[in-house]
Image (cartoon, rainbow, N blue to C red; front, top):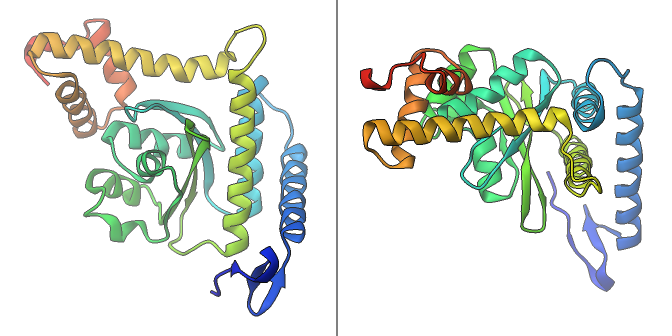
Length: 263
């Protein structure tokens, strides 16, 4: 693959030819228009509001890239979060598994503020041992994670799941980045709502985060450990018992999981 590079007069060179900034901007506008057209073709079923739009976005990108599925997740600085929208239930579970294990491309993309492209997930067992083991067992061959940022403000990550190992093409990466920009715009518009209310679907994802925080605090007090250790123990217990982290958090809050038995 030949790399685009700056040329004379502020142009970009690609394979020996020069592309002006005007032409590059025009190509980006064309991608945005095409992406929005793909999203508009997806029928409105089920969710409405921002979450409904994000789900249509996930379905539109899945069809465009011909992959297993796409997920948009919300994240915060301490790496906690929840799924805002997914192309299907299986991909939602695959993404939530990253929150349970506390590792994976989604976390690295959000922390580094750059795409994490993993064309062969099985080769990354040393990097994300818990997540890679579970995800490959579930039939995932590759994951491509794109952070959703505006300046220093981070909203979350758009993740693309493929059953087969293999890289995305340059055009596919460009299209995924375009969809990520649209997802960021949707979340940015929501955060600046004039009535101050949060979309019910997003509120649910954020509510998961609040429940995990509450359970984390309860574990901290009960086991006399710091917050980082409390979350690590919760994640280890949930993963070893094949249980979503949010389900364990709810059990702790409702006293269905006796903390005096430890984690």
